[in-house]
Image (cartoon, rainbow, N blue to C red; front, side, top):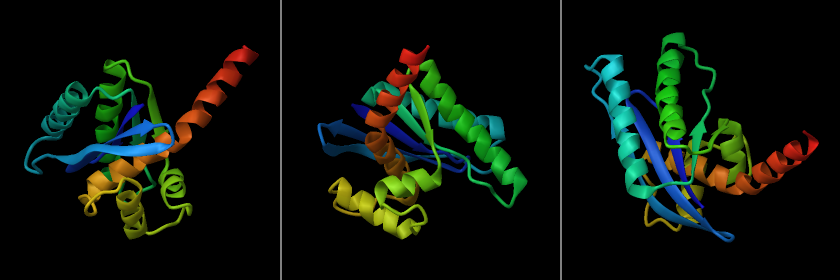
Length: 168
């Protein structure tokens, strides 16, 4: 299963692609989509959308995993982050992918084993789990962590969905 993880942001949107092969996780690619802070929000969202569509076309992921919004102190920042998340979710749905959302606590727990792990711990574990030569750029590393979280949760999600469908 090929998973596209996304760490949304209006300035930088990180992406990371991992493939789950049996019990192994294989790094496929990672990077970031940068927008210009001088551009209008709509233009920045289009840049994010178009960049993610290009990644979808190039790597053909089978699932999309996005980090949920954390509670921010600045309401305007949270609102803009919500717009970036919306662009990412829309790309997934428009490409007929199942879309999954994970909190920072879930991501940290899946990658490090501790929900309150420091960002540096998460980055180091991403490097180790994917056998990367170096720690990825911060936003890309966060996106890889989201993809890893889904890879670890995918079997559980499938079993839960089947159980719910049997009850209907």
